[in-house]
Structures are given as structure tokens and as C-alpha cells.
Image (cartoon, rainbow, N blue to C red; front, side, top):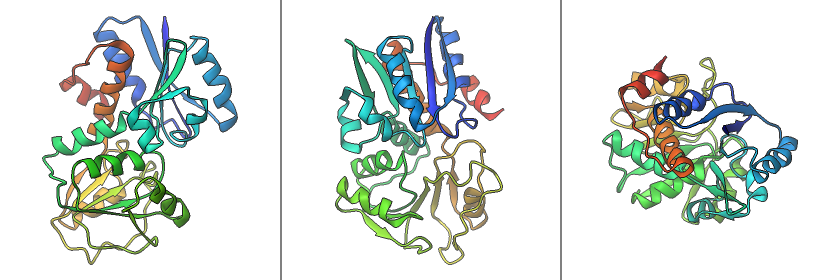
Length: 264
């Protein structure tokens, strides 16, 4: 039986096993998928097991999307350009790193019927998934992208990949059409960004990459101010479906049961 994992730290919040095991069962594939909390020191041994084909594939979440690159033999074009990996598999005895976050984000925004073209985008955070989101937004013809991170130097470092990126101090709120929370603040329902959105007005789009809990404090604030809101559930589903196809050669069905499964 083939083994697949999602690796990260923290990892308890991940619903990847529920989703992938549902698709595995539905498509009668003899495999199982589980979550594994790792430390930086654990990565070497984990990749050794992939190389030995003891593990058939893995998804990667915070904080390892960049850290895993040093253990990978070959990157896809998207993973190379973003320096971010969320899907790993073995092919011809080579460990391949892919990025399905880009496609997942693009499909999620289209599914929300939001047109990014010529819009001003403000992103909070600079971690794992942010390069993928920036890459997707540029591809979708966003007018400009501004970034803010509690550790400013980390945000500035992303200018090496995306030279037109603007970086502002944490706490500064520029004029925007769409704001994206790409920090981990909100994984616990009680966590708050502690930013003042009182002067932004309404008619904006608040998007949170977090999908569990369904409504973070960030989205709650956005909604109470009269803005459209969307959590990261669809991005999560769409990126997972692309990973599933890479591993198994089957496009899994995103049906009502999938949505109900993740809403439990």
C-alpha cells in the first residue's frame, strides 16, 4: 500500500487526510494519506524514505515550503520561479518538487467570481504560500501588489523574486481593493491581527488562506465592515486536486460530499 503525507509544523489543523483519503477510497486506489508533524532535523530522514520509495509522495505546508528545496532533485517551472514547493513525488529515482498552490489560488479566486485584473492587492505575511499567491496575481494581471510582514526583512527578501513588489511597515494600511491574510494568525479562533481597518470603507474583498476555522477574526472584521469575504477552503481543495492528479493520474471529482467533509 502506497503511503502519502502532509508535512508541517503545526499540522493538527490540516484537513488534507480527510480529503485525500476520501478521493483514494472513491477511486479505489490502494493507498493511505496521513499528516506528520516534523522539525527541521526530521526532513533529511523523511526525504530518505521518499528516495527509497517507502513514501510515495507528500504535500508540504508551513514552515517547510522553502526548506524542502535543498532535498529535491528537480523543480517544476512554477516551483523554480516561486522557490516554493507544496507537492513532492518520486519519478525515475529523482525527487520532484511541484507547486500546485498557484493553480489552487487562481481557481479559487475565479470560483469566487472576483476579477483581480487592474486591482490593488494588499498581502499580509511573507511565508510559505505568499510567493505562489504573488505569482498567480501577476499572472492574473493585478495592477499592483503591496506586502506587509511583522518581520519586514522577510517581506523585502521577496523583492528578489518579484522586483515590482512594494513593501510597507506592519500596521500601515495602504489603499487596496483586495486584502489577503497569508499569515498563520487565525489558525486559533482567538488569534487577532490587531490591525486597524476602521478607515478602509466597504466594498473590498477580504481573503484568508486559512480554511480551518471557517471564519477567522480577520474575515469577521471584514464582513462586519461591509466587505465581501472568502476563506481558503476552495484554494485548499483545488491545490489538493492537482496534487492528487500528479500522484495518481486521476482528476478527482470535487462534489458536494467533498465540501460537506471539510465543513464538519
